[in-house]
Length: 314
Image (cartoon, rainbow, N blue to C red):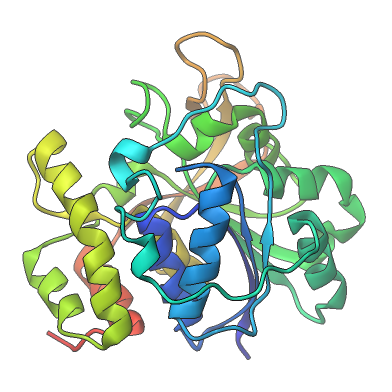
């Protein structure tokens, strides 16, 4: 039986790959896509989500608008320099026409999916955690219908927005803290510490480009993103952060977790957005443990992503 799945996202190039990955994987039943602010503003992320669902040939999946800003402090952070002004490397207009917009607010779509579900639903939160946090806060009666939350975000080591903070958590630290420090629903966190090790190199990108029309479109979207990593990091590989998290949602147990109690720094100083682990040195844990994915069989993981996307085997 496929795992019911809600995707909370902010497309973004790596989100684009993750979305198509989920929509093409028989192990999951994607029941909703909620697009929020993040890599670019809500107007662009929502447009991108609708185009990507169309690209995957899944007009049956509802796409709805999520949060336009963080829960508390509206301090916009964007990643247009990484993902392009449109979020997809300047190529959003080359994707198919958008699927229809579901008129319901994103939170209502999420709650409707949970109420209708007859088995636990996984939520993959691969953008700012605003909508997922609001769901937990405003609908406690539905938490027992959520099997797990899989989050792409955070960094135990260095961040990618500041020295301490990863983008998705930094975009709304208060929401991230609400999700990562709660006891109601199990959480798997997939941080930069792992995703940066899962870079797709030349050989695998060539495999993607050799796939069908959908794979070819994804390869084109990845190319400007790859150029940014080459220019700024001197690397020719492309970390597809969100696809790593989605694969864990699709195939539970793909990643190797370490149980850690986490806090998110929500002050307005230089540590804002840091995910701070309690390694058991301070007595009782300050929050319930989270499964933090810090290891994986990286070559097998990357091959699994490509296979599900439709790329030919190497």
